[in-house]
Amino acid sequence: MTRPFEVAIIGAGMSGLFLAHHLKEAGITYQIFERRDGVGGTWHDNTYPGLHVDVATRRYEFPFARSNKWSKRYAPGSEIRGYFESFAKTDGLLPNIRFSEEVTEARWTDGRWVLSTSKGNRVEAAVVVAATGFLRVPRRPAIPGAESFAGPSFHSSEWNHDVDLRGKRIGIIGTGSSGIQIVSELGRANHDVTHFIRTPQWMQVRANPRVNLAEKVLLKVPALRRYWDWRTARNRIETEGPETWRLEPGPERDRMTQRFHDELRKAVQDPGLLAKLTPTEPPGCKRIPKTPDYYTVVQRPNVTPVFGGIDRIEPNGIVSADGVLHELDVIVYATGFDTHAYMRPMKVVGPDDATIDELWRDGVYSYRGVGVPSLPNFFLLCGPFAPVNSLSIPTTLEHEVGFLLRVFDEIKKTGAGLAPTVAATEQFRAEIGKVLPNTTYSLCDNWYRDQAGTAIIWPFVAQRHLDQYAEVNLGAEFELFPISGETARTTSTGS
Ligand code: NAP
Image (cartoon, rainbow, N blue to C red):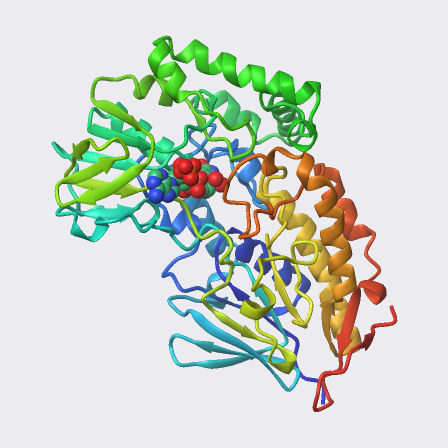
């Protein structure tokens, strides 16, 4: 008897909803498991003051659910979250989402995945897709004395809205996109802010204008909308540089580096502050925050930048590396995420008891961002080597989901489990390994890197991301795990 083809999606964030929409359109049965009580993933978790998307919001929309309701060019986080909530509702996805139910284990059992959940349920699926993202598990560094702090402290993605910030001395640790947005917002609102800057970052100073009525009307007309998107893409190249500057050394990279220096010098005239705010790392190594006014805000009298590392935390504040105690009432850790956790701590146990922890023991990797050898019918969206810095997320998902639908067809046709071969995966990694050292991502410590110091990121131009899926010969690059046999046996799919 043929067993039903069902897809279990882990996560109702941007990727999970994107895939669910396409499965629904294709008439494929699916369920989404979501540990939170709502959709939106990282946009559900993050509610910190000043949160907004830092790519033009138009590039953040699903291509099949255009909106003309954004209030600003870079929309506030609450609007992004509202967009996903409204999409899930109008697209009819909500009945298929199991909220507040975390998948704790996926185990390959007799050719099916059996999922165990936090509610004690066991659910079978033919295919599992981990759409968990990589900005999910907060990272709070182990700073000596942290637990002794007398006031409230929390991570940027776990903002404690019960804490009244009025009249409080607020310490913010971290200069990534989160830290920059929080400091800008609280500093602008005249709060007493101390910003702990271990490593100064390059930033792009970009205004965030309101979307005016004329623009909203224009976006309703398809031809004008296409023109607008073309113009936005062209402006983007002008302001952010051609995509190649990050990928290889040369005049484009030199020109962009000069531009970053010029922007900083224009914004900060005090030579002492300018020297301290000037990064020693090359631009583009870390992800570059965009800000309308951080450089202005950091020069306000109510904002104190503290440079260098942190020595320890005491009950009444933070002691910086130079031994000075900065007295504080609240500490915010804008210290980033465990970006290589992906679906973990969920356990994944494949045929022959292969586990994801064991497969990724020396560092995370994937086949073309979506698969892992030895794990048939188990896929990821925006997995290791995703183009997180070179393509918009919806475009990445369009490419990845298009490919997965092709793989799902093959799974249905063969009635078997499919996993990328070790050889195809190694070849993919070798191609990436060859060019990575030339990219800016390899020039400093950043969250793309694994424990061996290798950046797990897409190092090619955007077009190649689409092309790579078109060129796949499933028969050559995937192996087949027959489902009827007692033990998984690998053969070619023959397609
Ligand atoms: P992040 O970029 O990883 O930055 C973490 C910051 O914490 C760094 O400045 C790091 O300093 C600092 N830090 C960590 N441990 C520290 C310690 N022990 N002492 C002092 N400083 C310490 O994290 P994030 O700002 O949350 O951003 C993560 C990613 O989320 C971004 O790159 C972006 O992709 C995404 N994001 C997007 C948006 C958006 O609008 N679309 C907004 C926010 C975040 P070092 O540099 O010295 O390590």
